Length: 327
Image: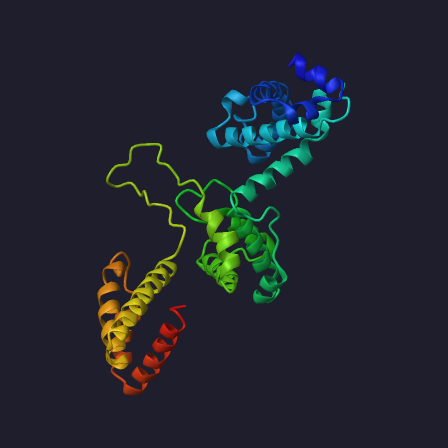
């Protein structure tokens, strides 16, 4: 710590750290951590825990709950990184200098951590998404909340979304005090997600990828046979169905291509392969949910293949896909 204070006093700390060996950098990082963690706890962690109503956590670092302690360490790490990177001028009082940069350092660290998880560093609704949502103020705010939440490492228990806190936001935004506990909020979330999926690559990059990196909830007590311990499901059943059907379609295209290369009749090859692949591949995957009242994919296919005009259209389309390399 004395070495770090001396380097900071001479305005050489950042330059020394930048060119230091791993051992020296680790030693100075440890010293910086010891200096700034009390400042971070007093100026950032304690006020934050009080606003959250975590009164025990606000007493001392030793009493911080696991999640609160993780946030504290993240903030300290951000301030340490800021100090060792930007201390390029003479600094008489390291604590005071770091205290003046707390907001900038912790906000920058928060954004960097979001970026590492693949989330947007500054969650904002792009113009195309606002247009898809019809400019609705609440749906636009809900979209921001979704983009913010996917970049947070924690989960909402066994739920994907923090419905309780969003219900309160909905009441404040819309003035509707009756719909917060109804399925209306879930319907609105699905509407926003559907609008986001209009650009699949954007959705995959900024929603699916960071959402898939969340830490799964862990049961801290022994669960008995009556406990409601459901796993966290980050994708809906319709997305699993689409992925499964896409895999089956790719397999069907490959088999049809092989049949055609062997001289099979195109219409016979298409009808036979589609019937075998989709009839065998879409039954057991639907056993984990209740029937939704609509026909299963294999039932729809049977109806389609029974009509000659439809068969000709399907054959022409499949042959076009095969000729295009299966894209």
